[in-house]
Amino acid sequence: MAFRLGRGIISATIVPNDVQGSLGCVRCTPIGGWFQPDAEVTRKVRNLVETLVMVSLAGSETQAEWLWAVPDAPADWREQLVVGAAHDMRNVLDLALYVTGSDEEASAYIEWLRLRCQNQMLSTFWPMVGALADALHDRRTMSGAATRTIMKAAGRDWLIRGRRGRPGVSMS
Image 1: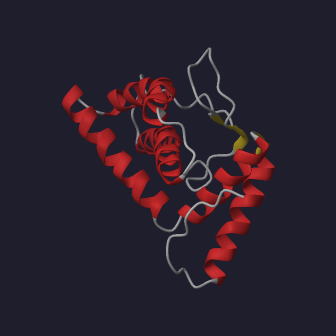
Image 2 (image 1 turned 135 degrees about the vertical axis):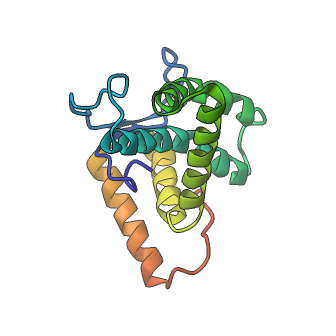
């Protein structure tokens, strides 16, 4: 999702981080000092908040879709996913609260962005997500340049095939 929304990717990994309690991480380029959502919410700040929320939600949404399709996924993958996404969800809530007026509005905002994220990933973007998931399954950690190369190639292949169907994730 970071690639799709124009965030620069430094690296991606599926190596668990026990300190953060995550199952993996996409590191993006740093955000400039202008981003201070606690001080002022401009259109530019709101747009970046939406991007950051969707990028944070994309990890667990992608993992859930991918693991659901994997025949040899661990039996407790759903529980692992909840634990792994806890850090991201804390960040998502903090960001949402900057641009909304209440907990109820923040929850609705997060759900709307989750649906947008899911719809984008599971439609036109899924071939790229699947290709990256396969590559990370094999390599565990990749540079930003490698992730971009894989995703661009998968996107081109999908366009060449005439945008037909939502391919499944292969486990090569």
